[in-house]
Image (cartoon, rainbow, N blue to C red; front, top):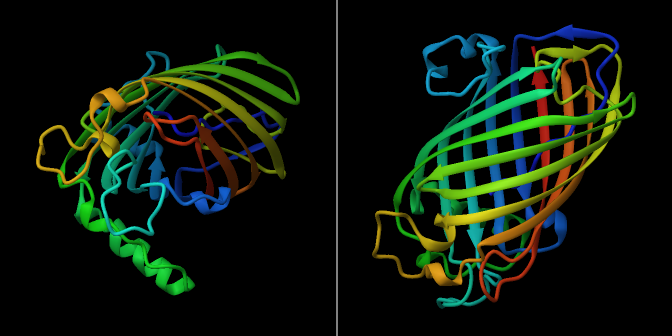
Length: 305
């Protein structure tokens, strides 16, 4: 599922350039006052134009008019819990405890004149206890004086994660203070199999979604954005367990998975010279039969050099 679709606004009138970027992303449902399902995500990224011409870019998709994509290397941890972490027993109709950690590549290829962008992603990692979500959540709760999370011994067992995804976006309209675009995404593999249609609207003064990433504004820019998405789900490893490991203490059967899930979100982003700051929230409908709607917030700090 496409959890969040970044939005952007107006093309900058004055720009500088950058060759590299590094970012830290922290997502948690604490920001939306819940503590269930997708409960935490931590990510580190490094990207550059030079990576786009390296051997790492060989498996990534690109547009014919932009043969050298901006390539990003990422390290990501995702943590999932049931609707309650206060009971030391299996909750058979609830989201299983699950943890994932993986390395990934993300490529962005675009044509600004026609307003077309193609993004592709490749991840490889593991599902299971070695992702250390149990230890991390226990450490955080202990440090904050919260209740001890119970039930992690029933988490989804170890399995291989390998996924490939692509997102094609098209600018639908654009003005000095607004931009709208539509997107179609698909991902396949052992983590998630799904397809998503999305729409994004941005308001405010900021770089266009079809501006090359290395172009940096020399004046402060701020924009707000909203997006909506509809996802058709084929497979979800944090709910159903890995594709190869069948000896799990608790997973949900395929007939309990919701096959169509709607989502919406909003956020704001500030750009100035070498720094980007962003906050966004994403909300989704229930992902399994008897489940609840859910939302989380994400903070992104990005530097360019």
